[in-house]
Image (tube, rainbow, N blue to C red):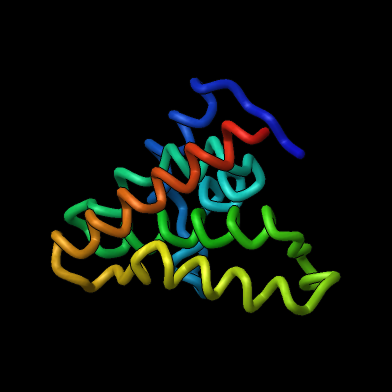
Length: 126
């Protein structure tokens, strides 16, 4: 599990839109690095999920999704060791407001608040 200082995470949040992958608009070096930094990074990108720029919202949501999947045992190139975990993650996404980058701001904010609560509980549990 990767750890980083608040300063490192903040820098990555501030540069989330820099140097996008030409083939995957939602991927940047900061998205990749934040995704590896787990729950604290997911918490840090929540405000960006309500950003005026749709692509910024998409990148922030990519980080959250990657972190949640990894938190539930997903590994790049391998998937979930326990296939039932995929269904658990999908249920969690729905339970936390089924965030949609194109939703009205009020709906986005409700989902963001739910994710904030979930992240707080998960981080408190270690």
